[in-house]
Length: 357
Figure 1 (tube, rainbow, N blue to C red):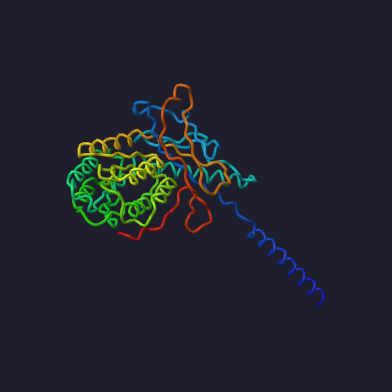
Figure 2: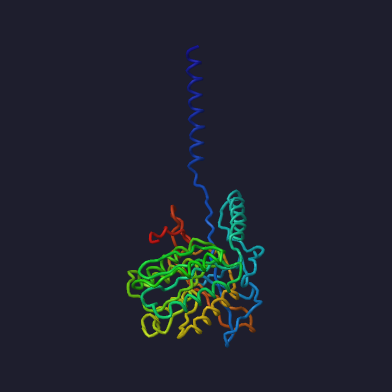
């Protein structure tokens, strides 16, 4: 009798051990996690006279990343609503039917989420030079900025920042034009100009938002107080999909180093630089930026498998013999950014909260 109990107990222990081992093995199996990132390009298309080309379709564009062809997933023109293209979803790299089904669900959910976040219009951050360079023509510059804010179409949201030695966030991103104009009118001229320090913080603020992100800088003179190199600012703006426009007065243009930096920075991000000699040219520059925003094509894609974890080069071309003479302006690449709290690399990162107020 004792022997029967002993055998039964032994068999029970063996059964529990085997079941526990199977459960632990199942829990130890690696879970397939799908990380879907999206790259958004803001593309201007013009003819030889600088006129905007409208009415282009997604199939008219060919995008490569490190020479790897990409498939456009979302597209829009100007402030029109963003549309999704059938079948243009992230590439499938799963290895089992179960994983295929899980990844397909993740892709569908991600596509819906991204489409919902890519709203019409742009998030426009205005960065105004209030350094001691700006004692002359200060009021005229305020007027030009105020007119620009009023002229922006309704889908656009606007933030107004100013800078001298430090950054001042006079009005955070909002659709309330009155709040922004109040921020413009309360600015006063101040200290030395730390343009690149403050522009870096503005880029970090803008990078938190989805959709089209634009920074418009009004500068009256060269940077004489920054610790941050302009190349770092330009690369972060490229990597986070932010277009930088710069309006610089004649005073800044007289400084060759600043002129070269402004031109390189704006070109790298797909923006433009304007050198305005007087308040009339300042108004024309702001009007040109407004028109540019109204005619940009937004093209988004999920990158195809690519082992490169550093700088990725982007090339955008027009397809078709009737389009080959047109000119394209957009950013030329991005650097993979580490996502916070994970080892996953992402084209668009969540950046740290800036300290300076």
